[in-house]
Image 1 (tube, rainbow, N blue to C red):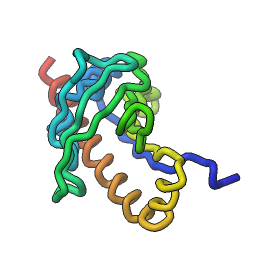
Image 2: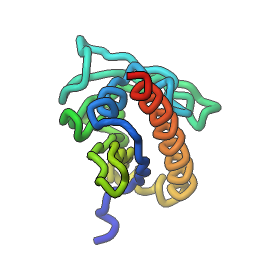
Image 3: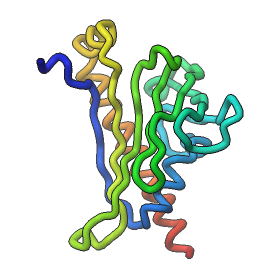
Length: 165
C-alpha cells in the first residue's frame, strides 16, 4: 500500500519571532515574490482579499527559476490562524499539488520563537505518480532547496521586523 501514500516533502526552519508574525507573513500571498525562488508574484482573485478557505489567487511562476513562466490558479484549502495556511495548485476539480505552511510555537529549549514547516504534496493521480517515478527525486530535491530558500528569506524578514518593534 506504499503506492497510496502522498508524494511530497517538507522543510522546517526555526524563526525567532512570534507565531502571529510568521502567520501574517506566510498567509499573505501578495508577498511570496520576496521569498520564493520560483513564484515571483501572486494576487488574490475572484474577490478574495485574504487567507480563508475557498479564497482564490493566482501565482506567477518561473519554473526552476529559469522558465517557462506561467500563471497558475490556486485555492486556499486550510487557513487556521497561527497554525496552518495551505493551498491547492491547479483547477478546483483537478489540483496538481498542495503547498502549505505549518506553524507552532517553539519549545523553551529552542528559546521560543516559531517552528515553521513548509510542505508540498502531489495529487496521487496515475499521471502524477508516473511523473514522480521518472523525475520525482530530482524535482523533490529542487522543491526542498526552494522551500529552504523561501523559509530562510521569510526568517530574515520576520526577524528583522520583530527586531524593530
